[in-house]
Length: 342
Ligand code: DAH
Image (cartoon, rainbow, N blue to C red; front, side, top):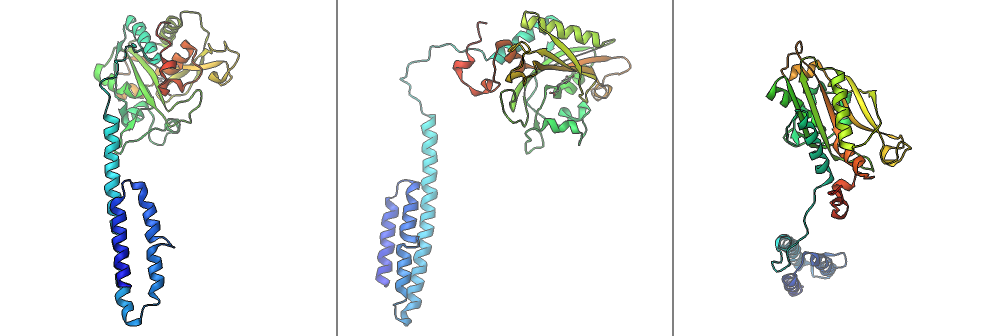
């Protein structure tokens, strides 16, 4: 029995040293340690060993078991590490002899719409600001009159970082910073990528673009807001489009509106892109709430202002007749490169 145990150990060591891939370890485990494996067979034989030898042989078998488990674990770790390294090297290596790609790149449809809007707004005296995708609770919610536990937060669940920061759910998150940076009067637009916990379908994405704008000055009223929105939309679509204003609730504006445009894909008949309503919410807007101005250090006795949060992704869908929002993030160049000459 003692010799048998030693032979088994030698057989195991030989097999293990021949293993080249982590996937092979399982077969060895079954062969030696499985229910019907070699070690189990030894244990059965132990019954026949004379009593005075049982202790010694039993101990030997136990040591063998420990040896097998520990060796397999060490080998597995070693192989896994090597396999990971090989994978990294394989992805990093490239073939220098391949011909150069000569096809020119193209702009993403969102970039095209964004640039067009930037031109329109800069021609109306707005300047462009750029803000980080990472923000914090104060800027994204508190400073916008959305205190903790306010139900408006439910619609804007997002991705939180371990630092307590978060990925911004709307471009409004930069309003406070801009007010503090420039004071009043100010006209600014700030486009950006936004993130929300969304169930993805033809008209919802967890990553999308908005363009926020605000204008603060003495005597700004709803008429100014309507004028700027109409001018912007007629320039973007270069045709007559139907719009409607509905009251809308956003804690950071009072009064607040939803500016809808008639769906340009179905001309108001109803289709999946407009959830069969014929209308698309495109630009929520309103007069900036005095609390928000105060948070931004603006004198509310002297100044008023409007703000809007244009859905850039939606606008691109309308402008280019893109029926499914998922196209924007899929990285399918065939789909994305068609819009440059339009
Ligand atoms: N931040 C809002 C959202 O994403 C949209 C919005 C509404 C922006 C009204 C505004 C506004 O500036 O005035 O849901």
